[in-house]
Image 1 (cartoon, rainbow, N blue to C red):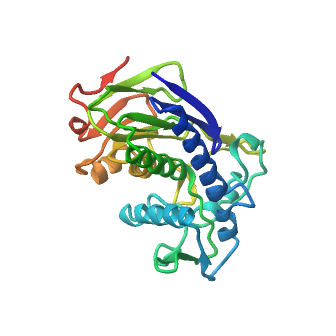
Image 2: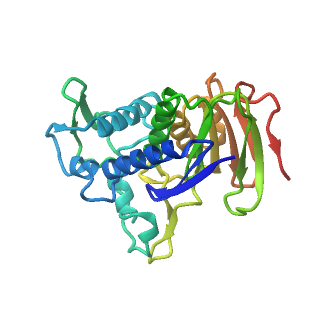
Length: 307
């Protein structure tokens, strides 16, 4: 299997079975997205937008489409997936790229956003966005997932019939009729331990969201992580520590994985178990590996779980 790797968007991007000339294109497009969508780069287009309030901002196609798709999932999940929590994350100490974080002074959480007020208005004709409520957008994982998904679609248009892109472990795979791919899910704490594996049957996006990977301790000794519950303005405190979602696109998998992690097993099962297009595998706080949704859409061998 031909593999390449490079660093971008604060993570490792890997390609599988993609020609070298296409890898150069992938690298260029990821770096372009990073320059556009980073919350931490004060020169990025997203940062420029975040510094506005109640003023129409004319967006590039990349920024406009990324926010449009994020807002779509904000709407369909009724605000559980919420890209408008940048100020809340800053208040909790996540105010710079994660690898630069040190202990931060204790800060008070900001109150949740008013759910009755739209956080922004979108003018599709002008490709403009107007921020309301003095908010800041944080696209987080969906920026990486959406970028990988868009690139995968471009590669297929270029005639590359099978391949995969991993953005920090979140995977977009296509052409499964030509080549089988097995996706392994690692334990978030015991990282050399595999908790489940799936042999994919069809094109899919696979995203994992966890409270473990990006967490930090304040100077007062409080441990925070980057998954903020929009209902409280504080880090999620559900009974799940990791969620993996399989969906038709990596963008959708990213959004729903975060929702399930916030909602917890019981509420998440009620909300998403009847979704015909997704499947999910979760790890609970008491170390149980559970699954739900329509796994048969993506594999005919079930989920292999490891004790």
